[in-house]
Length: 583
Image (cartoon, rainbow, N blue to C red; front, top):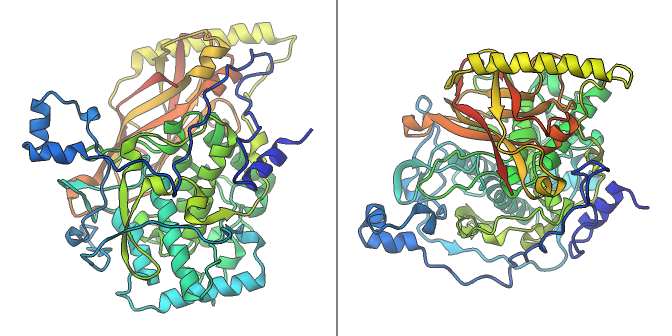
C-alpha cells in the first residue's frame, strides 16, 4: 500500500489528477466513518470566468453613499465590497520618523491583466537542490534587476517597495480616505503574494531572456531545507543580504517557535515538523482557519490571519532578520523584508503550502465569496506596464503558468501527542488526582480572570464550550475553534504569545505536545502616514478538535486556557477568550 507521502507526491506532481486519495487522520481509529461531503467546487479557470458583477457599493454611493445604503435598510453583508486596487496617485510615504517612500512610479494608464499560459509550466525548484547552471542564471537575473535605474518599476529596489507600500500604510482603501489598505492578517495574504511573486519571477526571466525561469522555494518544511539555503550566503553574490542574523547562518536550523534555548538538531527538526502538522492540518480544517478572515472594503484591516501566515510564515521572517538593526531589518520587519532576495524564496514556499493544503483533503477549498474573488491589486509587469489583477485569476499555480518541484512532505506524520500518558496500573489514581487539580485551577481561573487583560505574564482563564460530548459526525461537520479576540498592540512591536489548554505548568510544554494549542506572532510593521493606524486590533483562531480528542477533554464543559507572552511582554492586551463552532 502506498505511503501518505507517496500519495501526496503523486497528487502534487499531477495537476490534472483528481482529488488526492489521502484522507487526513482527523479522528481516532475507533471513530465512526466519516460522512461523505459534497464534491469540491470547480475552480474558476482562465478560460471560464463568471460574468463581471455590478458593484452594488458604487450604485449605492450614487444614491447618497453608504449612509443612504443604511437608510434603505440594506445590511453591510448584502453589499458587494471587494477590496479595490489602490490609487497610486494618492500613495504616501510610510513611517512617521524616517518618512520611507515606498511609492512606485505613477502611471495613469492601467491595463487589466489576463495571463494565458503558453507551453509547459515553469517549475519552481527547492533552493537546496539547484545546480550550478540554475544558480548562475538566478544570480545574473537578480544582478541585472539590481542594475536597472532606480525609477524603473522593475528594479530590485522598486520591487522591494511593492511589499512595503501594500503592507505599511502607503495606500488608503479606495472610497475610504484615512483607512489604510493591508494585505496581511486576512484572506488577501495568499493571493496578493502569489501575484507579487508571479510578476517578480517574470521580470527576472525577461531580463535574462529565459521565459522558463522560475524562482526557487525555501523548503523549510522538510529537514533537508531547514537551514538558510547556501545559495544566499555568498557575500559576492547578488543573492546576498548583509542584514541577516549572523547566528542563523548554516548549519543553524530555522526555529518556527522562536524559542530561547537551542535544542539538538533532531529535536529542532521534530518541533518544526509538529508545528507544520498543526498549522497545515489540525488547525487548518476550514478555509477561514487556513486562509484568514474575510476583509471587505471599509472593514477592519486586520480581521485575523490564517494558520500558515501566523506560523511558520511570521517566525521565519523574524528568525532571518538582523537583531542588531533597529527593527530587525531586513526580513524582520515588513517595510524592508523584500530587500532581501531570500524573501521571495520564503514566500514561494508559503505559496506552495497553499497549493499543498488544497491537495490534502477534498474539502480544503478556496473561498467562493465574490468579495474575495473580485478583490484586486496593481503591479508592474515585465514590460513595465501597470496592470490590474483580480484574486479570481490566481487560484491555481497553473493559471499563472508555474508549478513546484515534487519533494517529500515529511510533516504529515507529526501530529502532537499528550505530554504525559499514565500507565494502566496508575491511570485511575493519576486521573483522579488530575481531575482534582483541574477543578481547583478552573475555580481559580473563574475567580481571577478579568478582561481586557494586559499580558505581561502567564494568565489562565476558564472557557465554556458551546457543546460537549459531540458525536464523530458532529465533530466532522463542525470544527471547534478557540478564539482569542481583541488582541491590541502597536504594530511596530514584535509580539508573540503561546496558547495552552489544560496545562498551567507550561515551561516544559513544547509544540509537539497536545497541550500546546498554538501561537500568535506579529511581524512588525512601520507606521503608515496615518499615525492612528499604528494600533492593531485583531483575532487569533485555533482549531482544537484534535487537541480535545488527544487530551480526552471532549466531555468537559469548561476548558482551562493559559496564555503565555514570549515577545513584547506587557505591550499588548487581550480582549477575551471564547470557543465557537465552524463548519
